[in-house]
Every structure is written in C-alpha cells, then in structure tokens.
Length: 213
Image (cartoon, rainbow, N blue to C red):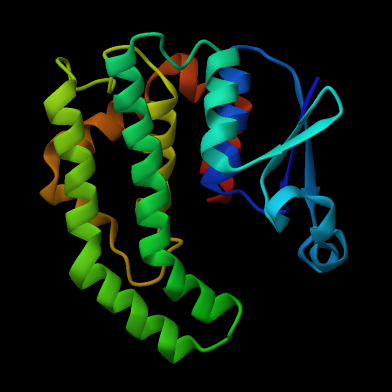
C-alpha cells in the first residue's frame, strides 16, 4: 500500500500523485496534516517538507521523485528517453512557475503582509505570468502532433499541466484574471479538452479539486 501525506488543503504537488494513482486504480492511503500540527511533526519527514510518500514502511520525499514513481507505477510515464525528457520538462516547469509566484503567497500567508503580497503579485503578473505559460504552450506545440497530450499519449505531464493551469484560472489567486489564457489559444484549447477527457474527469480526486479550488 502506498501512503501519501500532505497538508490539509489541495495543492498540485500532492494532487498529481493522487490523480496518477487513481487514474490507474492503484489503491493508496492519504493523510492530511493540519497546519497547527505541522510544527510538531516536521522533524518526522525527510527535508522537513511535504508531500512525502511511504512505501513498504520507507519514507520518500520531493515532488518530482514521487511523481516519477507514481507515474511509472500507473503506466503514465514512458520508456522512450525522448518522451521522458518531455514529461520531465513539464514537471520542472510546474516547479519553476510555483517558485516564481511563491514569494507573493508567502508574504500573505506567513508574513501577513498583504501590501507586500499585492506588490509581488503584480510584479509576477507583469514579468512572469504570460512568459511562463507561453513556455508551456510552446513545449506543447513543439512536441505534440495532435495538441491533446504532450507525448501524444495521456501521461503525468498532462495531469501536471492541467492541475497548474486550473490553479491559475480558478480565481483563487488574487489579481490573476483567468482571461490571460485567451492569449494562449493552443494551451486554452488543450486545457478545455483535458477537462473533458472522461477517463480523467470522472475521477473523484478530479471532482474534489474542481469543487475545492
């Protein structure tokens, strides 16, 4: 049995793992750690971070490593080295854009400095939002022949891209208007089709993300 542990809110770093496993009907246990309990539990985990995964009583960490494991177990990775490179680029892109927006999130959530957060968010929107999503669209356009899946077969790259796009168009990120995606028609159409891809959209985890985010 695979056990995943994350905070008591939905976020892409754990959601992509859950969606992978659920897509291939692989059972897993999921534990949510309340924020108020984190300080006392932090030392339990490698690198003092979440998500973590427990397999055969051994603990593993870091999103990219866990994603590769879950995707391989779920047959949502690939054996072709060139397609592996495509998938890994999408995973790295997700981490990079998260790092770009993270300062504005930390300023609000940890520092409670909302003016600083607003300033940083505006800077992100001006300097990074369109650029980083255009990188993703260019990646899709360059490698996908049908513009439906990054490797022309549904994979964790698509799960990750869908989850990140959803986060940015959900309205949950202050000052970010979902209309920014209108300037990226290939990516917008890709996201729409993925959201209607029945084997994916029928998952309870998918519906949970839509309802809570």
